Image 1 (tube, rainbow, N blue to C red):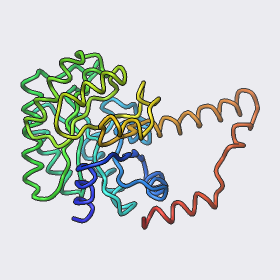
Image 2 (image 1 turned 180 degrees about the vertical axis):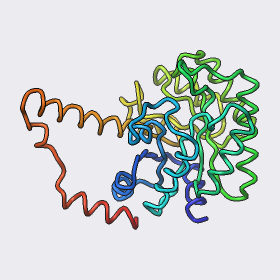
Image 3 (image 1 turned 30 degrees about the vertical axis):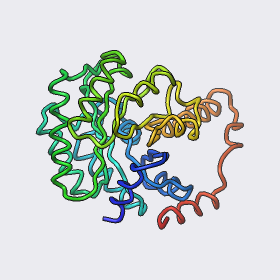
Image 4 (image 1 turned 120 degrees about the vertical axis):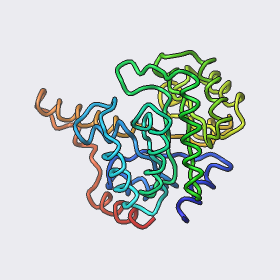
Length: 273
């Protein structure tokens, strides 16, 4: 309960960064470096399984992965659970219920489908899905942050005006946190922030990567998540270093590796922080 209350409290004022690990080691390093909470990343998890991002992980796999991250550190963990692993409101409610059972402190649910092109759910269905999810979250009878995502702007399924309309409806349906990933720029993020009264999550990706935590906080962002960005940075290091070795015969990229003792210290600290 302490974890869950701490996660709830983080969303009540101020601004915090929510890093997204993909295994116990990355979770412990992030905890040791000062993270206050963590979240799964559907893409980063899929990469660890050798699968593509879109719909690459089942609900059972996602829940087991979440349990692994929860066990890695004392920090609260939220689940990035795509569309809730099903199209119906009942599917979303069941995913929320199961998330509570495994010990997650929150969940993020998208309003687009896990098929090529990510088409958006019809407006009324999208709202009913969020309403069912927030009702299930309330039935847990403990702090649990339900984040409702309007992903259609990022995926090209609808424009910013429709994204804002959906966020406003999701807020009315009971969502605790609202999230429109990768708006075209700072001005559009300002529009999102001005359109709702509940806390807003921003993704450190696209044009928002040029902003600092302090700048996003001053705008009124409550939570900043990293999604799969740190995992993608790690995979870029694999791609570039191995390409240099096998293509040019150069080990120069390995000159920037971290000291093993430093990593060991972070892993130990993160398990208890």
